[in-house]
Length: 570
Image 1 (cartoon, rainbow, N blue to C red):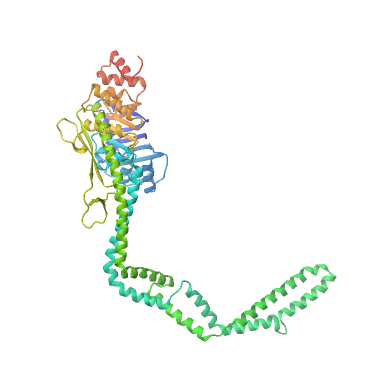
Image 2 (cartoon, rainbow, N blue to C red):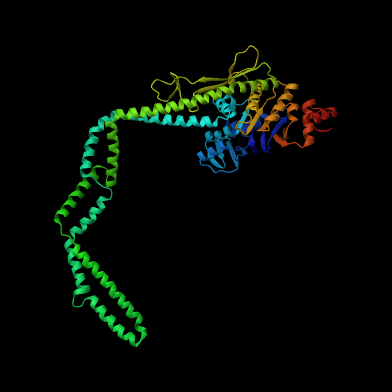
């Protein structure tokens, strides 16, 4: 929902700030007051075209900002996540247009590209009128609307998963086939490298262990002599540390019997004697295990040399050598069993194609079940809206056959059909608004106010399932009056139960139903023309509706008629 719209220095608008409401927001104003300027400004934050000519004369830049309430809006949440933006209940879209022709876009005060801004606009707003921001005129939207109407999310998701697997396997098969020539060419090289590495058989962490063992073996004599001297000094020599500590402990024992102050030093000396005893046992045990093994020493030196050679050839580290062996091993296995690998992938691809085809057919069948119901509903609405002889049809055709050699396709019996990301169906809305005319694609039939009425009919039918929270109708009332105008107003009012509606109108039958009535006015200030927009109070609304009924001269009877039209007591 659009909460707030701010426009600065755009065309005739110097400054406009307006708060919108949920429900039906109506904008009226005299011809030439600037209603279309508002729509042009609003379209800027939806990713519309921009021109430096639209910057108000004398201003450096034009700024348009819209604040949207988007809590719970799944598509917007996905866009925020995808573009790594800050999430909040309110989404702020801003567009700045400089007099020099440059344009800057912001979402929640973060600079973004125009494409990103447009993606948010597409998710939030549908603008119908003389502008090109009309989702229902885009063919790809027709499928989304039909699926939403039929609540086909489960079937769509099932097919989409199957299609993703089909695409993944097809890509794997293409990659495998593209590797065939290279794999066969490099097979002999891989075989040689595998043999060379396997003859050595390097193990993870082996080099560090061998280097430690080599260091010990190379210094065996030094270790033996040093530990032998240590044992002598600690335990067996004439002045062995152990004996001296035992003597000191005995002396301290004698002293402690005289003065208890020596109890602590006596205990510490006893502990030191125990430590030296344990240290001596370790050194004696270590000395007895020292090995003089020239054969083992030579083996380790030779093995480290072979490992060093492998490292030099295959990556600089033992881990790189092992990783290279795994990589070429897989490539060699693939090359040696290429036909079997291809057959295996082809079998998986065909199985996946079968599952995706079945899901696509179920989805297509459900879509076809919906077409008659949608068509009937739209025709009823079109008749109510002043197009009694209209014809409407939801056309569903299978997608074209895939290109030769393309593995991404579905099977419908013996027929091959392209596998689209959303199924096997090409969906398009067809329309005829006049008797005797053939049905044609929606985008080629109507224009101006007629298009808006067609959109209104479709929106009314699809209202409960349509995902766009805000619908903007510009010139929806062109060429209608009387009973049809009243019907259009009631249809807008009904649609406003499910969407926020902003409609520009000159018809009292529509303006009188507003939840919020805004008036566009053109004023002259300091020799310059300025367009303003303000919300009308109740009595002002009555006068505005009366003006739309009777022209500039508002009469008492005109006011009474306006009150009656608005459902107010006289």
